[in-house]
Length: 140
Image (cartoon, rainbow, N blue to C red; front, side, top):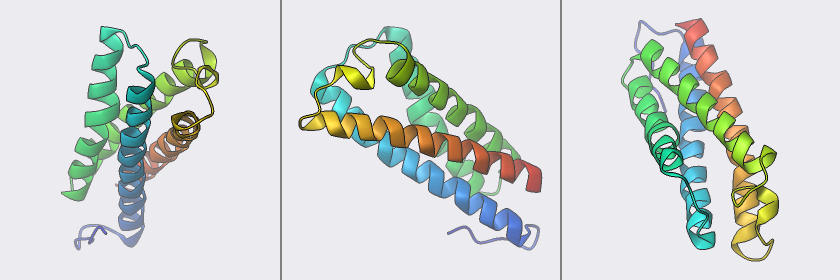
């Protein structure tokens, strides 16, 4: 996936590849989870919409491009911050605060199972994305 230049070690190459895989999984999970949100017409406050678009939707792919192009420290920091923000937001609204965005608020029929599964899987990919970003930072 990521071809290491002579300046990068094999360990750095593996860490960048892990970070890119987690970024890709996060993007796919976000698209599917967003579709479930649309199906259930879950209301969001304006600040939540801005946070979601900037931190959850846009920042991780930008971090991935930076990593891919060799800006390892900047890409890893952006990935760490965006995945951390995404994880915190998801944990609070999907699992802690009861409301329309909580996993227990949706019907398990149809899109409900998708909503719940992607909420959980996004938390996993975000935590693993943070770990991958930290590994890149340590290796670079």
